[in-house]
Image (tube, rainbow over the protein chains, first blue to last red):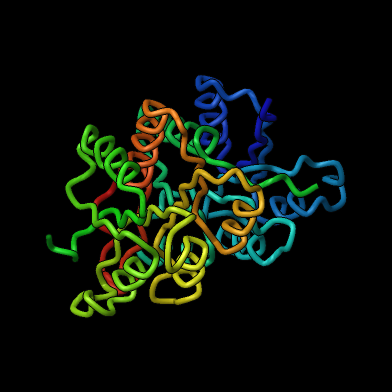
Length: 145
Length: 158
C-alpha cells in the first residue's frame, strides 16, 4: 500500500493554519501535518537543524509568501537550491495577487500558485482541491531520507 | 483556432488518449481552447513560436502543457528540459502524464522542474476522473504565470 504522504504547511497566521488543518481533517487525508510560522523555522525544519533533527521529511509543502524573518520566496529559493529538498513539490498559498509575486514564484520553481481565499467556504474548497490533486493522481517524488 | 488563447497544449502521439482527454475536458467545459501537438517537435514549435507557429508570440503562453512522456522524434523529458531551461518559457506549468511506471522517469521529471507528474490510469473511467481533476486544478484553482512578467495586472481574483 502507498504510504500516506506527509505535509508541511508554512504560515504565520495561526488562524489560517487552524483552518487548513480543519479542512484537511474533513478530507480523507490522514497523514502527518507539520507546520512552521516563519521562514527561518521552516528552513530549520526542512534541513533538520537543531530541535528539528528528527523532523519528518514532507512529501508536499504548502507555503505562504508573506512570512516573518525570511519570506516565502526565500524559502522556495532555498528549497530549490538544496539537493535533498529541490524535488519536493511546493504549493504557493498566498493572498498576494501581484503579478510579480506569481511570476517570481514560478521562476524560482514553485509547482503551482494558489490564491488564498478570504471567504471561509472557498478556503475549505481550495484546501480540498490541493489535497485531492496532490494526494490523488499525482505521483510524488520518492521521499529522500 | 486563435493560438493566442490556448488554455492547454496537449502533447500526445496516441489518438485514443487525445480523444479520451478531450472528452473528459469537454464534460467539464474545459476543452474550448486546447491545442494538440502530435509529437515533441510540434510542441516545441508551438511553445518557441517557430516553424509553422512563427507568427505566435511568447506573450501568450498556454496556461498548462499536458505532456506525454514517450513520443516520437523528441520525447517528453526533452521537451520539458527545453521549456524549463529557457527564461521565456520556464514559468509555464508542465504536467507530465505517462503510462510509464519507471521511477527513474518520475525522478528525472521532478529534477527537470516538472510541475506535477501523473500516472495515466489504464481504466477508462479512472482516466476521465484524473483528467477532470487535473483540468479543474490547473485551469480553475491554479493561478497561471502572468506573461513572463510583462502583463500589467494579475487578472481577476479567484
